[in-house]
Image (cartoon, rainbow, N blue to C red):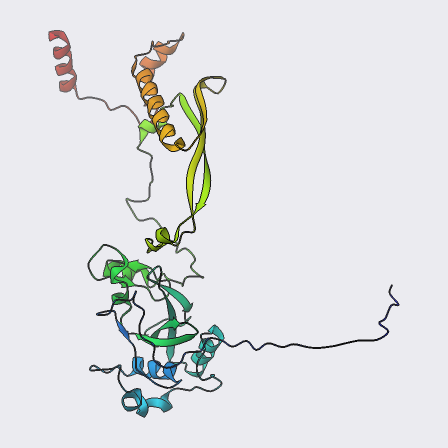
Length: 354
């Protein structure tokens, strides 16, 4: 078939589709999920396709009173400060375009975020690689409505995350990784370490004096427990109804897991070579979860009752001598404390009196 060739072509066509990025347009109101007051956002009421330029100028030259009004009057005198060469108008929501804008304007450090309506939180669109106080920090927010988008100025990132948690104090948001802090001290400690969301290596920290030794003190966990419970739950996935999805505000869920069966085995293991199956159960039904919890609680009560019964001490030849000669604890490996003579005398007197 290597020498095969077509005798004739009946039809030949090429179809090309244009890829149009979502480009910001004129003014769009803020989404309802964003707080209406004290949100740290300035939404300029422009009626042209230059909203990106107006918002950058608005961040560079803040106006104290009614900064959202006519941008031509407020910022028209500063238009020549920005180098918009090779920047499409309107400016699309595109990382290469943002990088080109920073190349044209080397004194600007730009971060662009997008508001997630369902989770009520910020998402990254573009994060600058420029750090330091020598750059002018510009934080912009992209909001969308159907096939339209619009830029806004984030005047105060910290106000935008006020409802991030139940803590009703001022919060501090890192513009590079979006980590929220409730303490300004911790926030300032984080900034020199932060390398951004996608490039965040761990910062090595050498131990300091008097805090360089890590020890294990939960010695009760070193006592072996002879009982083991091995169990498994089986689930069925059911799709959520529309009214159930409407109740969710912070998490997007599509399915719900419902238990339909379980199996467990209770094993007593006094050593790796000596074990015994004490009980087991296998069940399938709509009440599998309730039945499983009831069964496990019963088994735990039985295990606790069995372990509470005093057991006979098994002493092998030589154990008593080793016990009298030992000088350190076999659990924590620490030496026994030597009591002062007066304390020993009091103990002897108490033993005599008893």
